[in-house]
Amino acid sequence: MTLPHGKSDHCATGAPERRIGALGGPTRKMLVGGLLIILAFLVLFLPSPYTIETPGPTQDVLGSSKGSPVIKVKGGQVHHDKGRLLMTTVNARGIPGYPASNLDALVGWADPHATVLPQEAVVPPGQSVEEYKRQEQGDMHGSQKAASAQALAFLKARGYDVSGLQFSMRVADIGGPSAGLMYTLGAIDKITPEQETGGLTIAGTGTINQKGQVGAIGGIQLKMLGAKRDGATWFLAPAANCSQVAGHVPQGLRDVRVSTLDEAYKALVAIGHGQGEGLPHCTATKGK
Image 1 (tube, rainbow, N blue to C red):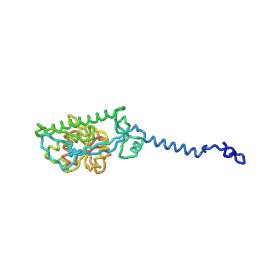
Image 2 (cartoon, rainbow, N blue to C red):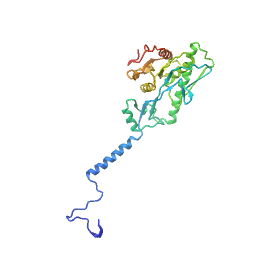
Image 3 (cartoon, rainbow, N blue to C red):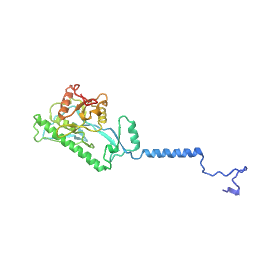
Image 4 (cartoon, rainbow, N blue to C red):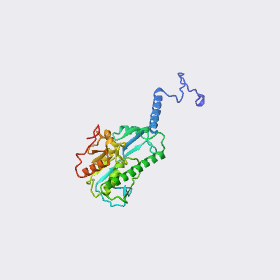
């Protein structure tokens, strides 16, 4: 290199030229460290192979969703209950249409009120957004159809005239089959003159089939947290889920184990009459 006026850039001692831009050890380490930090930061925002579940919203099946009754009755007189029957849900990220990042997964692992699962444990590998929505909507429609049929059968068996009686059910932005039990109880409650809830807030979950049996569902621990958060003091839990319920019931919430619609309705009435303390609850083995 030549400086202005043709002078050499060697110093008087003849020290060798230092290349501009050469990095010393500490500087190089700082640069590498900075690049690694940036890389780690970028990795945090890449899509995660995990699904993060948290307590979702609840919905009073005796109330309304976006201005429309959750359960509409046609061909019968409606009786209004002063209490609430809450269906419970789980929020999920890392499913088709609702992506999650690695950062979301890390936050979920640190959150005692969240569950982090491999995606393949929640949805089939390769399932598209449309396929997922179709499945969720189909499950919800099947749940509502079974709930209507079971409510009509229950009422008819107890002497109610159900000729011409029809139920239609709808909740915005919620899918899946787990609200079957609460839909059924809500439909029955709307027709019977009795105040089944006794003015209380009672939550629950569980599928319902054509035999009136209450089936297991997923995410019950998170659903109990959502129920407690939204004011429920009682929770109807499928007997098949008792192993996940026992030891995980939030303080201030009392679980009741149910296997059939008949058991669930009797439990509902007992709770409303202030006689719920003797009802069976879940234990680690099953319930008592």
